[in-house]
Image 1: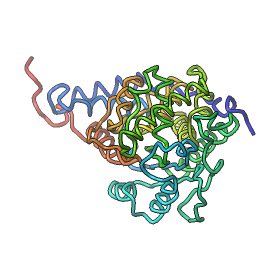
Image 2: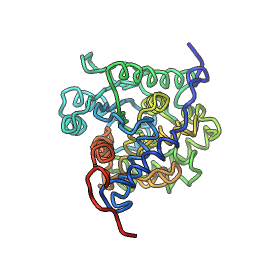
Image 3: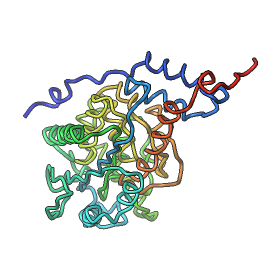
Image 4: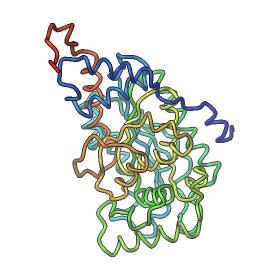
Length: 353
């Protein structure tokens, strides 16, 4: 197997500023007061910089939802039992979870991936079984994964993007499922943003005060035991990450390399974005933050990545639900740029001064 260095050899190109300037010039000539479409204009400019065309294709959207379990769940840091991960994957496959409803609503293709669910998940035509192992090790006692497992997980994400590109993919969104993964995401965020554990850690699935106090202690212990190196994203992933988070790192990197916009969901997929940006800082130009999660660390994470969320709906479900809601906003921004007339085209008089 190729090393992770080999896997990441194709460098992510920065988004194209010359194309962005062309988009800005067109927006300024459209039949509207200057800047009156607000952040939609900024978004349209970013999409042009990503795609290198004034007519970015945005219709074929794909939501990749990766699932895995976390050994740290045995520390009692979740309001739900670990069996829920496999049960929710079955729910995804039946098409009856929130992400299925929203994917149908926006006409997106959804890809469900078993990256490391602890319980056996029955074979299904809609399931990509890419299990690295039946859940990670307990990160409060030692490393969650080996570096080789991280390499396999990241490569899996890269391979999935390659498969989706052959089927037609203009926009990709990230989603996840895994009992215990807010604990892993909090640990990653604490390491990568240098904020204290208590500032980046929320109540996840809605734990009570006793569970929350335990969760903080578990994360602090994991960081003390493992001492992840923020300068080495592989080290951070292997010590306090998860299989689904590592897989999403690969999804983000490969999508950026393919010059596709990446719609990041919430806190857990944001942790994957933090790691991907640590591999290559140009990744951030391809990221679109769909919403601001209720998780307190998410705001700090977005500030670190310098991303502005499109929505703020007090959501904290995950699965890719926030990303699904944001995709039509991207499509709207692109259509406004492409389909609105300029003052000259419409025969409308421009501003006097």
